[in-house]
Image (tube, rainbow, N blue to C red; front, side):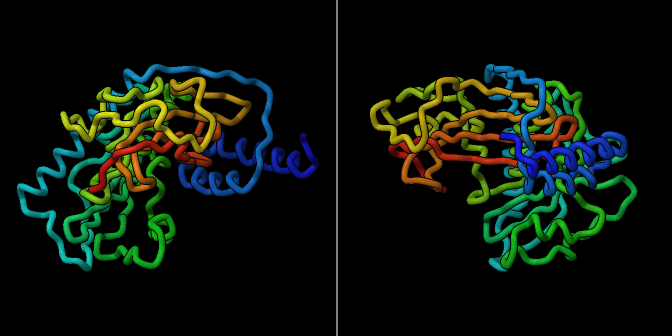
Length: 307
């Protein structure tokens, strides 16, 4: 039901969206994401759903995983992975924009660049990719505070001249561009990850129910028992209804765009066993910083592994 309060929210968001359509500022889009996340935007007129197969998704995931592996192997060769337990920061000399090379409908925003801060901690590692305007000085690695007391998002908000990574990305507003954005965002979030920092790299995007003993095309691109589904159909414990449609979808509903897809992983850090995960990202049409992102484990199986 469309209440007076939700209508007021809608009118405010539409007005703000109109301003952003003219300004198209990545920084404004980042602010809008937070405002929109706190409001319930009612469905507007116009509703379409596109269904995609996973051929490109799996190929792109493998391509990015090879880039991640090349970075990791380089650090191993140069003996850079073993860092003090106190943790160290550096700025990557590998351009994170390489993650977008496999995307035909996305590109780096003109006049902007992507930069990556790398955090290394006793052999573990994480990467934090940010967007920045060309010609603007970004904080040095020495200026990045510790992450022990708060998440990276709060730290990033207080740094000068840097923004969330997807604020530096533009697209052609096609359904494919939003599907690419959901995948590229996850790859950027795991850029420079090592050992316990790795998670998304172990996932396989699904287009059907995963059958026992089949070997999905994992992003790891490895021939290992750890990449084989071990859970039999009757062994899955469902935490949500079993999907009728497994293939990735992009749904346009007024000014909102929602990307939904499912993945399988044998990484058993969330639950005691293999898991099937539902991923859902919501965007304001025309922008590629997600208004909302969610990942929900919908089924838990047996087996699995931990790093």
